Image 1: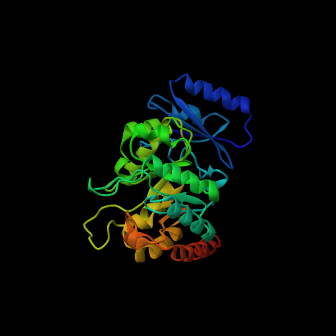
Image 2: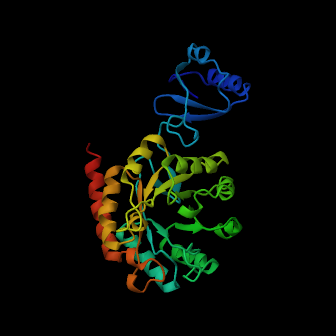
Image 3: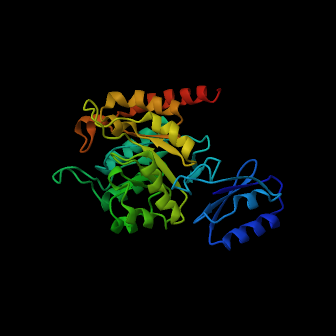
Length: 335
């Protein structure tokens, strides 16, 4: 249930209402909007008298919420969430490019790419240290050493680190990581999500291979229920019957999620297609659909990459996408 408070209401009156609602064994999530204050009631609201609350002079509207996700629901939090990552903001009109290699391979490789993507316009550096691979014989990443190399690249360029966590036991190693990525395979690893909810780090949550949008939002709810509201959702393509691309990029999900949730939406066109030449059109379509950021794989030598080379862009190709994406964003702001 959502209770909207009239603008200009005395704080003491709001607190009186909050305390009364808490006495009904409800948890209250308060959000300050541009025009009013919103109280989100979490718990068993079946016994709450809507007419009684609606009759209060300080209340402008009361609405029952049928969706199972509460904290991630835009009805509870009308304004866009803005996440600050070391001074770089995402959401609420703030757009970021996140770029880097699928996997960290060497000090020279990651530092060179970090410099290139930074000069092209990306503020955040992505790179895999722990790699989930379908085959147990494929390159699994440099693990803890890869995290150290990412920190080295950050020290050189100032770019915050975005990297994927594979297992709860690895969490202590992520102390210096700026954004923890939860991959598609771990989207419903609920024990991991619960623990990430206890951290204060931004979480980039990727949509599962066959997950619905509601399932994605419910996974975000696991993190937020633990107290961490710094969650970004990532559309990275879903598995369908189509075999010409690795996955099917669900552009409609970006627009619909913007309606359903206040959380920032990031698009990953690299994993969606798995083909480098498809990254540009998908990236630009995602921007036009309202994405708050793009995460793109960039490698200085894709032909010899240890992981996902066919979908990686060269730095100069990435720089072109940055310019075109910014041009589309400028056009979209005029409408």
